[in-house]
Image (cartoon, rainbow, N blue to C red):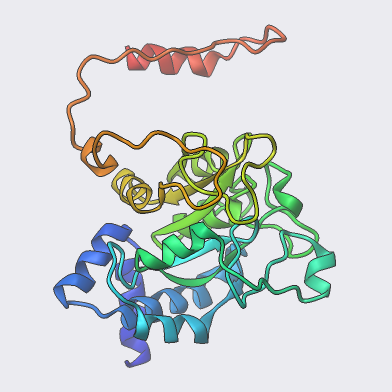
Length: 290
């Protein structure tokens, strides 16, 4: 592939969600190798400005693209947040200088990572996170701050800030995150993308954990579209061996819900915190929804 072609392709693909990219591969218009090459090109050109990707898998990703099998997202480039979901042979530092300095490498895939691979995703790297994912900004001393691609003077939030910034900047169409108290939802809001913290035990934390932070921490998804979140959840939202409990299966695929008529709905809201502070913006939003 000529460099100019790859660069042009990466710019065109940056506007597409994962579903659209997978459709290009399925139709033969683009190969898996071309999708991955375009993502790596965009990471090389854009990431220095935002510091979203801290570990690239350039050569492994190219090999994986050539060998990828079938799956709903065959050949689509994907990023993992560098905490909880580890991938065999790749750095795993959780935002910690201690692990970075010792060049810690994961020995196995988590069950969720196995499912991402089975879905056809090609892992092109790992994204920045605050130390032990314990902050609403992504500014670890180990790797420095991640910048919001909409305004580099601002933060994309945390703790899945690296994944959110990468998706918002079009480095990849969808990425992994996890959430205990807002670590997917906050970055999704700050970056203007879609984020989901699923139902408790909808996705597996195994084999390392049965539950995490008593059971408040869940694996999640950050994407450019609602349909991507639904389709990814359809392929990864199942129990795994050893899970202490699991969420009841859906009545039908989540992707069908994205086009279903919701009928009449009621939305509850709180307009004050326990200290009594009025949230004017929440009231404004409630009025708009009415």
